[in-house]
Amino acid sequence: MLKEIRYLLLGLVLGGVLIYFIKPEPAQKELQTEALLPLEPVTPRLNNAVISGYSLPEQISFAGEEVPMGRPDVKERLDREIQVNAFWHSNAIILIKRANKWLPVIDSTLRANGVPADFKYLAVAESGLQNAISPANAVGFWQFLSGTAKDFGLIVNHQVDQRYDPIKSTVAAAKYFKKAHQKFGNWTMAAASYNMGMRGVSQVAKNQRAKSYYDMIVSEEPSRYVFRIIAIKNLLENPADYSFAVDSTDLYQMPASRPVSVEEDIEDWNDFAESHEMTFYELKQLNPWIRDYKMTVKKGQKFTVLVSSAE
Figure 1 (cartoon, rainbow, N blue to C red):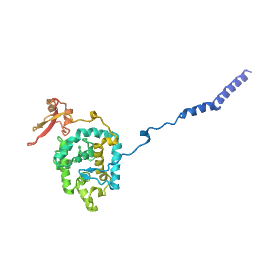
Figure 2: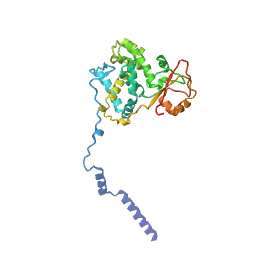
Figure 3: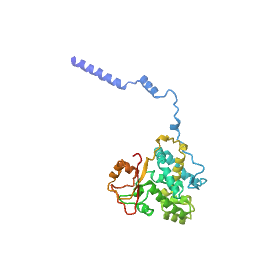
Figure 4: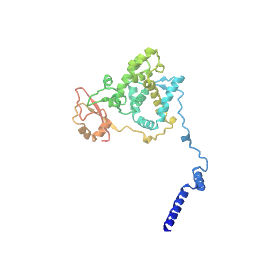
């Protein structure tokens, strides 16, 4: 009898468990479904719902030479570079900030050396206004290879590498641009040759009887190169057109410094820095062309070293 009661109780318990798991709960299900539905339609925010491309300028020039915007192929190629560079928001903001620091001095250096100021945007396209090093070991704002740098008057060795000097390297770049302009007769092809080489531009122009850069059929990188420079020019000259608003207090500034002439060997740059109440780090920030802890100065050589003017 006791055994039968135990089986009966066990059956009731198991039955209750099965009923709990399989019984429908329409009221609860309906309540859950209603909770997932919005009470009223939600209007999406415009900036999340619509992404519009940036408009192209109706007219634009490079180094005083008009870009043929009446040509559909030219508009399409420029459109690509404008959208790519303007939609890369973080990079654009940084470039706007760096431009305030570096472009005025690069601009004045180019003009003083007889090159149109628009070539400063080539340095932006090449390096982002940084002392970058490419996989091919091209160095600095202007991405000079060692041999080319020496050809255009820069000192390159284990102690001094003037490719890292933004001003000295700009002077060297200006020499290249003037030589290329003399060869091709226009600045746009001179700019293209900085990517393709003068021989490359000459060969393509000859084989295709091309009168301008815009008529040359070339590979992907040189095909985009000048258009990228033009897009960067338009972005940095008209940031508001692309909805960029950078507060003036956030723009990067050139640190206060003064030049010191050095005509003798430097046994230890740390000692030199301390004598001017600077750290070695601060000295290198102002003079990135210093590549060692000492410097041998040959007879007749003279180097200009920037030191903090706060002393």
